[in-house]
Length: 167
Image (cartoon, rainbow, N blue to C red; front, side, top):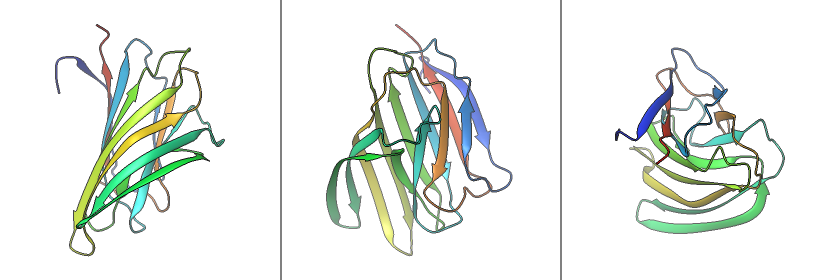
């Protein structure tokens, strides 16, 4: 990682787990980056984030995804209870990167850029780019939960959180 990235936490699962938790997050950085390599116990499911335990419908997103040779865009400004991420697959390791901007600010809503992809012989290759995820809240983010829509993360799944140094 570049010199501006500071390793804040790393989790490598030795058994299955329904979520990975980062809490008591240091508030001295401008942005956060979470890099995940996941495998799921229950098919192809989305990997998600939830901030500060907020399960209300305070999240929305726009997603562009390429699966095989098809490209689709989903504009879902309807309220969700999580930040939508990339695919967690039972067929192979999936990579997801979340860029969380201005996470420690208490005056702006939080935006998140997500990049993710997976490949397996069962259904081809998928690459997704979330143009925008939004947490409609101005609170500083102090707790992040990473979880799949269904199933659990398999043993060997990893998640690493970096802080981006202030200029």
